[in-house]
Image 1 (cartoon, rainbow, N blue to C red):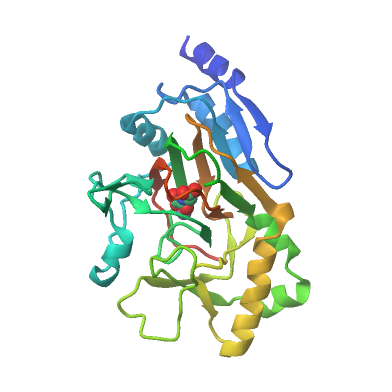
Image 2 (cartoon, protein in one colour):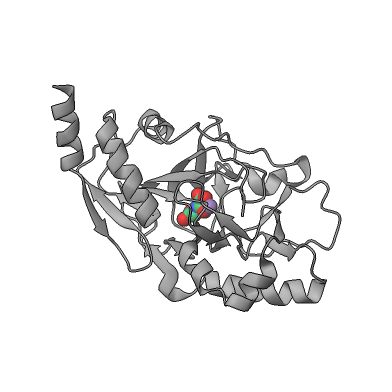
Length: 295
Ligand code: OGA
Ligand code: MN
């Protein structure tokens, strides 16, 4: 009997691609309900193929969100910013260690969550750490009347678009990722970074589940290719950022209330468009813990 129910659950799932770049809408899943093994397999297969999944019209409590995310691995803990950067990073209502409120809302002049207003450049969530989150899950609770779209770029396609001579030159190379808790200002590797979160990862990473190669570089946090002189590193990084941000590789999500999004941080970078400061935007985020990455 269990098998029959299971098969039915997977059969109800519909996957609709949302752009030629990446992204698919999933219907036929209620995120408030436990997921059957076959439904899980169907969603995971769609995720590996489309990189970003959108579930519309969901009513997801915090517990529902954490339960659903935990099917895909151990939940990630919110990272604590170093004391010197804490004012940029931490809101006053971040009270669950597995949950991050992404919002511009302030209470008594204090931000309650993270990432405030405005544009957010392309980045990888916790790409500056030894184990970048595998996955991020974001659920919309309050939205501005316009803007605040989240854009995703397909970094498998970006890898494929890197010219052969550059692939050869960068083989075996690592790049430094630094997090200064800015959103639209490139981190700088020139000063003392000992007190600032940073980590070096291969420029090209093999996705552990799909076995496909991806370009693991972003404009916000990737600042230096190791083993090249500074000028050459900067020139090559500019080329790589531009490839990663090619319009044809990007799926842009316009949020509606009830949208639940999940993305794979190993093979996508993401960014946010500007939105009116005077309007409220609130999303609930959780993650799945990552592992060291290899070329
Ligand atoms: C995030 C993020 C973008 C957004 O939560 O990691 O980058 O649209 N959010 O707020
Ligand atoms: Mn992010």
